[in-house]
Image (cartoon, rainbow, N blue to C red; front, side, top):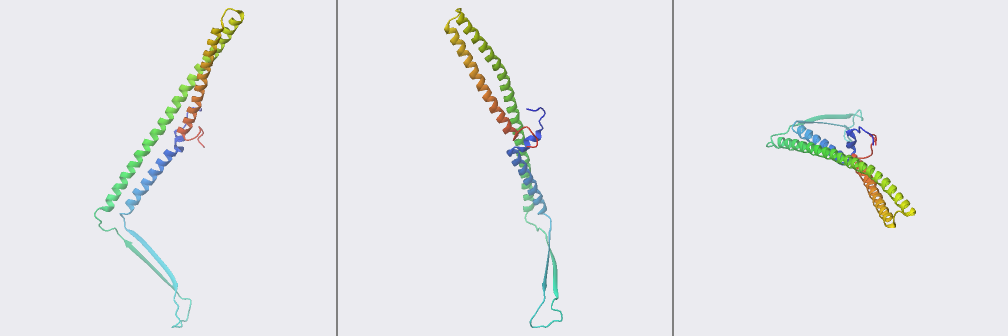
Length: 195
């Protein structure tokens, strides 16, 4: 695992992306509610040909153009537009608070995954040494049994100790892989920034 991973890796997590989108939507809705308080101007235009079978005109291709405009100003609506803007502002603050909560949870998930992985890695080193020591003790016990200075029971006890230590090491190695998967899930992908 490379050192100095940027925190931008967390922006790939689906929950962080969803929180970012909620913030963007809340800001857009707030701007929309602010814009609803201003007058609206609409322009219209049309073009057509003026023809008639009753009148014979000199130029049959005489286009008629019309351009018009209208202004709609929001009238007094009992403070509804202002209240709507206040609601959108509150939604905006809520989305920001949710985003902060999601970001803190993401950082916490990564910290827990890293801590667990480091702890499991340290335990693996200790257990690897213990397996080597148990294997060495088993060989010595077998040699003593072959030369006649030890009994079969001590050999079996050493085999049991060796197998137990080796099984514990395998469990820790499995846990290390699980913690690596948890770290990838917490980061929202692998360690590369471009992923």
